Length: 240
Image (cartoon, rainbow, N blue to C red; front, side, top):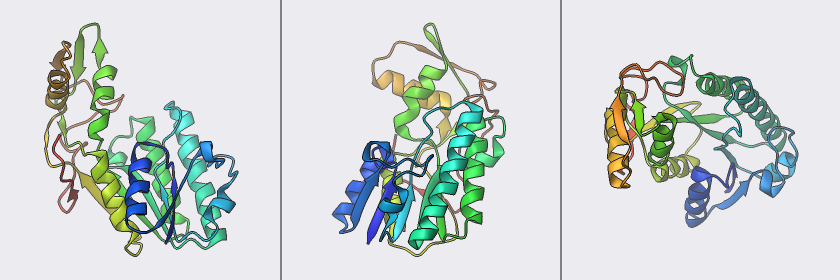
């Protein structure tokens, strides 16, 4: 099958393209660097010509509330329109677990809007909702840093390896559209502050972690159910 990976030059996209190619698919990574712009629509028609499946693993270039909402809403509409024109049979999209439970976060609101557009587009779809990636724990630490201290929420956290996310997407490419949602999390659940502490210790970072139940998560209020999966979720194989 011809599988177009939108955002194919990113963390998940690069891994997914490799897995698809190894599985015998014609894996086509597209991004701005290949002349495809999901905001203007430039290059989408040509990229999608003959495509069986499109996988959207794009990320917004800016995380401001208005900017991120505009990115995911506009890109989702443009992708759907180009898919309809090209006769694409399956749209796969990567979003975030429990995004609708964190309305304080502009990013989460944008992901909810993206999902709604996908569901209403008329293109057969599968949405994969993943927890935060192992690879982003360093960013979480930096976001909570003031001086030599890192203030991090104690809410339960269940990060997943980017490789496990790509593996699930590659698996779903070979399956019919679910017209539904698959949730994915990592095999370990601990306070986010514990994961950050483990990361700092493993990398020789001397910053001090301050566990703080009120710290939030990039501006969103969170509890033990916000950043973890529910019953029935897929669980990645790779421990933190």
